[in-house]
Amino acid sequence: SIQVTGAGRCNGTYQWFDRFNKRSCYKSPSGCIIYYNQQESCWRINSRQEFTGFVFQAKSKETSRYVSNMGGHSEPPRTGWKPTLGLKGCVPVEIFQKALVQQGVPTEDLEHMIKVLRGSDEEKDSIFRKLGETTFKAEWH
Image (tube, rainbow, N blue to C red; front, top):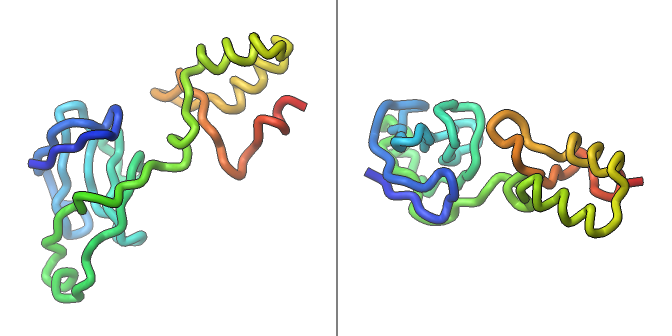
């Protein structure tokens, strides 16, 4: 088993449950997974059982072609995990809204910013910094 801490909703004890890209996959009781992404040569943690997205990732520590050629019998690294850029600058909608109201942002502008910066699906209660897509200044003016 693998114990994950300091990862918010992805915290927990992960147990082996399958193989993906010739490597073991691990799953927590809450449905989060740890899997290997072969294209990027990195391990990923996703908050749901999907092999296309991730919340955290860490470069593989493999340096040996032998390990790779033998079916990838490596394990996820214990250190070096980085969050997705969306998690750097995440705040609950109600706190974002309260702060902007206190600063005198007009209601129409506030509603537009929340619409643009709000997360989707299960993350709809959070505002995310969306690098390269828009800026606070651009949405306000």
